[in-house]
Amino acid sequence: MPAARTAVRRRGKPPALGLCVQYAHAAAGLPVRSTLRRWTGAALERDAAVTLRFVGAREGRMLNARWRGQDHATNVLTFVYDDAVPLAGDIVLCVPVLRREASARGKPARAHCAHLVVHGMLHLQGYEHDTDAGAAAMEAREAAILRGLGYPDPYARA
Image 1 (spheres, rainbow, N blue to C red):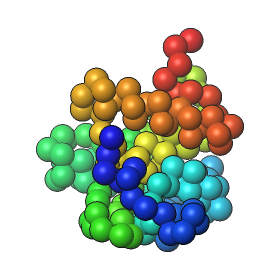
Image 2 (image 1 turned 180 degrees about the vertical axis):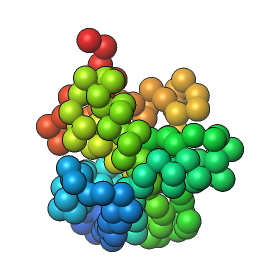
Image 3 (image 1 turned 30 degrees about the vertical axis):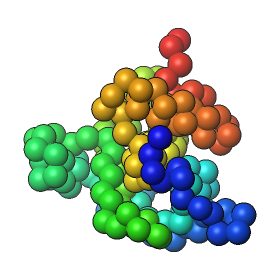
């Protein structure tokens, strides 16, 4: 279980969220700030200051190459800058990859975007999927959050 899950909430209050949204790629069809706040808040387990940035393929590829050594754009990247309280970090979503994946999977882009935002938020808070146990825990948490937001389990087999 990630250390983030053991963080104490402020006297029973929900965690505080500072959210900055950046549209570095054309925003047509992308969720508005209030929707993104709802999605990030649903996955929030501790106080955090988060920047959610939507980028194009060029920036997505550059960031993935620089920080992960992979020369292609990926759907979501998470950067943790400070693991203290409040937690601080960025979540970068590559719009062309997000849309291509949604289309290939036959699901609405909005549902896939919600999934990637939740996925990024969980990474920000210490969840990982590099072991079978970690993947199972993270996927179960994602599915529960998305169900609460009205979206189907992204891992359900058709």
